[in-house]
Length: 138
Length: 138
Image (cartoon, rainbow over all chains, first blue to last red):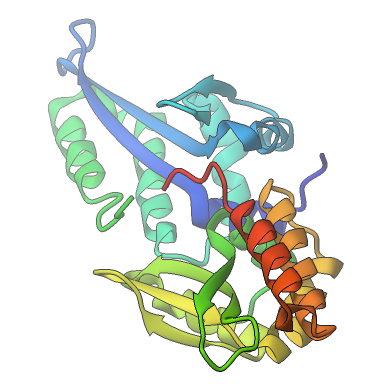
């Protein structure tokens, strides 16, 4: 199944999620690790759409999620920076999810600059992450 | 906000719903009335997308739904037949929602032909309606 860029933007406006997790990690200087993640979750009957997204973006994995649901997921910082972020810069989301994307992009830029390695950077990333995905009532 | 047709298809693949309600109605010969309805529900923060859909399709209304959610809704048989159905024939949905759309279209064609006025037609519409929106886990 070949996807059109505008279709992908519309579908992600509806179903996509940009999230930054902060996990304790003893190997990191700050004691924490930032985990940016782009996901699209679907009922298993539409798994073919998740594989089509994987082929479209040329990265990521399709994995089981909760119950009958599966997720297309991109966690690699390089793939997010090289494939996901440039796409949504070129094809901006139309929903308020666009604001989440801009925060997500900012976190990735900080990580690329190494800002996530010190405590100030981690605190800033945690602050940005806490402002994302508000008001989503699923 | 101007919408692209492919964006609309992607967004509706994610967020849209084609539904046929069957309500008792004493004025109808069969005792029942078929109520086809196309809806897109969003959190109120994205109400601008619902108004953009209304402008895009040139029909329908934006109304409050449950809690913090609003719905773009088209119930007029004429508007469904003249605006909504032709759009999704030209720009097919890529998700399994496409099968719901085909059933929805079939019901509208039956109603256009007057088949919904007799008991057999109502029973057929009820049967088709009961097969729609299965497996949606919202």
